[in-house]
Amino acid sequence: VCEWRAPETLKQILDLEMRDTGESHQKLLQLCRDVIQYSVKTSHPRFFNQLYAGIDYYSLVGRFITEALNPSVYTYEVSPVFLLVEEAVIKKMIEFIGWEEGDGIFNPGGSISNMYAMNLARYRFCPEIKEKGLSGLPRLVLFTSEECHYSMKKAASFLGIGTENVYFIKTDEKGKMMPEELEKQVQRTRKEGSAPFLVCATAGTTVLGAFDPLDKIADICEKHGLWLHVDASWGGSALVSRKHCRLLHGIHRADSVAWNPHKMLLAGIQCCALLVKDNSGLLKKCYSAKAAYLFQQDKFYDVSYDTGDKSIQCSRHPDAFKFWLMWKALGTTGLEERVNRALALARYLVEEIKKREGFKLLLEPEYANVCFWYIPPTLRKMEDGPEFWQKLHQASVAPIIKERMMKKGSMMLGYQPHRGKVNFFRQVVISPQVSRKDMDFLLDEIELLAKDL
Ligand code: ABU
Image 1 (cartoon, rainbow, N blue to C red):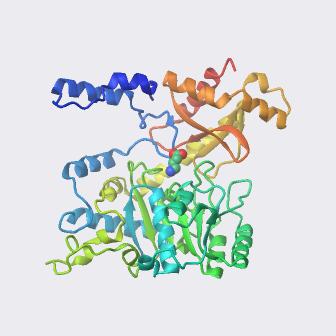
Image 2 (cartoon, protein in one colour):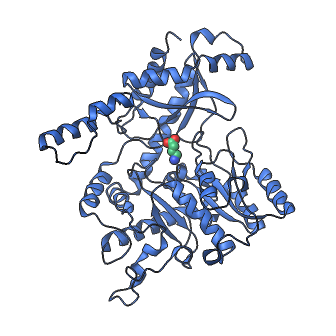
Image 3 (cartoon, rainbow, N blue to C red):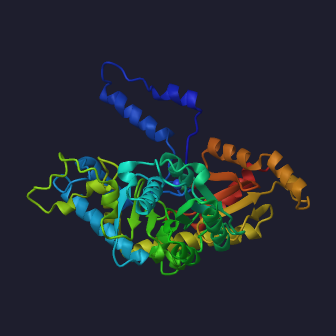
């Protein structure tokens, strides 16, 4: 999976210096080989480290094409095909959300989609902000769960809302936002004299893979007139599975949705859409700056296809294309099988963890995040309690196993402490190249790497 080298060693191996004269092709080829050799093989079936793994081959072909053609998706005149493809993909994604109509834009990352949504919700709340700026606004407050993605804080800070004005709503034992807590916090905000404007629910949280109860949250948003954004960057792909789409029940009631096909569907980084229920041109109203050198209104074709002014970017990569090519190749049933297969394998792993001595499941997962502790033999006899957890923490079990797996190069698996719980592993099952054999390997390998702990 990887050939680990410390940064100083790798710098020496790679010859990073850029010189006045160019290098020979032979040298360049060697450099390319080195780059490949020391990069992490994220398509390896034992790369379980992130919320992405592997790349769909059709999507890879799509990337070769777009990299070679080098388009920028802002005007129809320079990107006729890619703009139409983006429109078709957005339309199809909107269908899966369950909206009759809508709009959208592909972005460089789910964090940016979340930031777009936050800004859009604020624009709807006070459209004059575009011209007048922040002065004179009431204190704006938004709500999201304690388990939300860290981009919520970043977006609030970047947009001048302020991180103190992000109210984190308590979650239940599965990591889901508690609607009754949300209701209480909205009322508290009103009593404070602040202005609530947005609720960001999460469909597929980063660590636990939890899905917020969207229908109940939508009721509260409707009651209080709040924009509902669903960060389904990770969990959105369950929408293509008839078996698992119930996880997102109520998503059709959202005002906006972030959905990253580069995660569970393997469309390749990055492939991230922000989808908006509004069909009155809100994106364009909020973001347009009407550059006359790009968006001339007297062009010879239908300028509504010049969609670049819906974006905060100018140059933009045609990320929808690789997803479109892959969807064309696999069909919706192929995408569905991919999701079903990953979740079935995650379930297999959960059952194997339950059977093995020394492995302790954190919770029954709803999605592809399987979270567990490895308890070394020396601690297995101890009673569950504060002392046990302190010892497990002090023994640095997960960090040591992680170091050993990376130095050996046998697999990659993430770990983290989380909300008062000591370091545990988060295994993410995504790639169709992964089999039960890899799940068994993962558990055997942890036992092997930790045999002396
Ligand atoms: N955007 C969340 C990704 C972090 C992770 O892979 O865990």
